[in-house]
Each structure stands twice: as structure tokens, then as C-alpha cells.
Image (tube, rainbow over the protein chains, first blue to last red):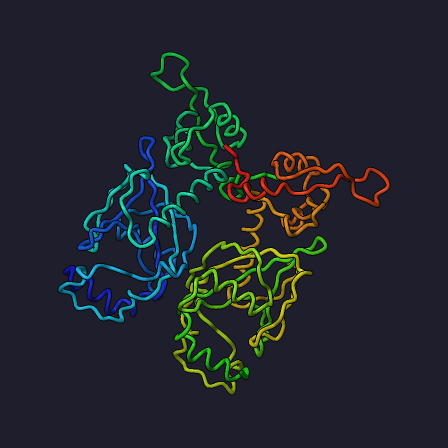
Length: 255
Length: 255
């Protein structure tokens, strides 16, 4: 389908297929070489950056919709998603786009896309070198940005990103992370760097090691990192059973 | 307005005032004399128990809607609300009510109320003796139930309740609670009973005391509980500044 035809059908007929008033926004975090990145789309003819997002088909589970949206818009499949917050503010509701966008397009003034939307926010954490983002028909580009160097985002997407990052920072203080993000065998400094990147601050080495070992999710191997001549650090693996259990309960107080 | 007129207007005209496809469900937990209770409504002419819930007006913030719904349906005002999960399953969508409900009512077959709804879940924790629940025009009764002795709930409300309780149990392992639920001065056993009631299990006394004191949110007073002859327990107050700070960060690792 041509872009013009697609957009017109989407604006004029979309309400027949999708639930009105409800959208999905995804914050996809990528971890690579000790940098935290986020995946953004550049909308065609708008030159504005947005989070990957979309809508729920009338006969579709919400979780299925989220996975479909990420696959359609970014080429990503099978990634861990966490629902972190639903955004229902009034000020987010107006879908304001430049007049230019509608040039040469036949779009009804009462299109469902101009209605108010409540948006359900999900975030994901992926090893970014493993994924090949593909822009969809609506997007010019699909690119990773360092979280410290984001372009201006449309709508309230900066706010959604901020809340997602805060939620992720909270999450890693309470639940294990690292599995699927680190190699099978890793050192304590590797794990600390992952935490430091997400928390965006330096952590005390001894304190970190002590707390991490106390969680019981790590196995120290009888092996040190190869190729390090002096004081080579020990290698660790995750204790998968303990890791999975802690994913359910959180570290918390462990009262 | 009469019940019949109200219901007919709500089913036949409600979509003009409320956002379609989106509902709010509230799980209001009450703590009283070491029992955890939940507030339920009994719907008129249906004899079925439901969580207090409602819809968002087209020009209303979602948070405002939640507060309005709780006030309208239960008489509660100014209570702490926590958004815990949004429910988007397909199986929850069908609004099935007995034919009996519609007897003598003129309701359109394509009423917005028969559409699918995504529901945003909030929970609250209140000292239940302070509130006077008032049934609204739709409800026969508005009552507290012990969480261990709930009646059958309509729709997926049992699932929503279970998720809310799980979320609350998680919350108290990571964030302080007790302020507004306990008297200004309380003993360590009082605080432990609050945790035990919500967690629904016994906790080790020494371990609990040690972990609680380590959080830094408690001030031990130079006073013991009056009226206790032998080994009277010390009284505590919350350190409000530390309490408020920890409400933002959580206990977590404190990495």
C-alpha cells in the first residue's frame, strides 16, 4: 500500500479496527558497551521523533498488541516487556501535527486519531547489537540514541521516557537484571558497570560486591578472567533458579 | 433522578460524556484491629459484588476521575491511591449481565457499555473506621469484607483484587507504610502486626526489628507503652523526613 493510501485509511477507517481512546507507547532500552540507549522513530513528513507505539485491535489481547507493535515498527521479536505506567493526563490528549502533514491528504476532521488517548506504557531492555530496527511505512528512520543525548520528542514522549527510566532504575534496585544482557560468564566489574550505566552514577566497589553476593543469585566460578596478567577478576554466572525466584519476589526486605 | 431513568441514560447516552473502552477499578484496602479488609459494592438488581469502579469523563484527568469515582461510590475523600496495573485481556471484555437486569429497561443493543473495556487498576489503603461508605444509585450495599472471606466477584474482579493485594505486598517490602494507619506513637509489635496482616504470614520478631531499625524511618522515644506492667515495649514515631524520602526511593538495595 502506498503511504498516502495507508495514512488516509488509517485516519478515516482505523476506528473500525482499533479500540478508540487507547494507545500503547514503548520505551526500548538498549545496553551496549556500557552505554544506555533508547530506540526512537522519526515520523515521515513530520521530522519529529517519537517512541514506538500503536493501537490495540478490537479482538486482540493488549499484551499481544504490544508485541505486534514492536515487531511491526522496529523488527524486534521476543523481548521482555514490562508495563510500567498508564498515562491519562488531559494535556497529552491533543494530537497536534503541523498542517504540512495533511497536505495532499484527504482526512476527515472527525478522525478518531484527533480524539483523546489514554496511553499504556511498556519498557523493554535489550542487547542492542542483537536487533536490527526497521522503520515501518510511517517512519523515515528508526535509530538508537544515547539516553543523555535525546532529540526533542513529540507529544508527552519525553515525560513517558523519563518515567520509564525512573521505573527501570527502581526495578534494578529490587529485581535482578543482567541475564541476556551480559555474557554467560562475567566479572563483578562487568555487572557493576551495567548497574552504573542504568543508575547513571558511580557505585562503591566493595559495597556493590557485598550486596550482590548477599542476594544469592550469583555463582562464583573457580576461574578468573582470561588474558588479564595481574589480579585477574573471578568469573561469575547467574544461579538461574535463584534468579528466577527473585524475579518473582524482589530483593526487598526479604522479611 | 430515578434508578430506571439513570440506568437508561447511562447505557444509551453515556458515550457522549465518557471515554469509551476505558474503565477504572479500585481496590480499597482497610486496616482495622489487625484485619485486612476490602470494600465491595453490591449492584442493585444483580445481586453481584464488584470493586468500586467507573469511567473517565472526556474532559477529565484520569487521576481526577479515580478520586471522583471513589467519592461518588463510597463517600471516601482524600485517600492515597496507587496505580498498580492496567488490565487489557480479551476475556475480561464482555459485559455479561443476566437478562433480568434489563427487564423493564429500554436499553439499546449497541450501547457503549457492551463494548470491550481496558481497565486501569488503582489500590488504596485506609483506616476503615474513619470512612463511612455510602452506596450510590447503582448499588444496594457498600461493605467491607475480610480479605480471607470475600464473596464471589463479578467479571474479572477477583483477578484484579489478587493482583492488587500482590502489588501491595510487594510495595510494603520496598516502601514504608504505617503513617496514617497507626497511631502517632506505636510499638514495634504494632508495626509488626500491620506487616503480618498485609503479608498474611508470621514474621520473626528479632529479624523484623533489626531490619525496621536499619531503614532509619523510625524514632525510638524515651517512653514505654503505658499500662503494661512487665517489660513494657518502647514507643516509636515515624521520622517523617526519612519516611517521605524513602517513599520516593524505596528501601531496595540502597546501592
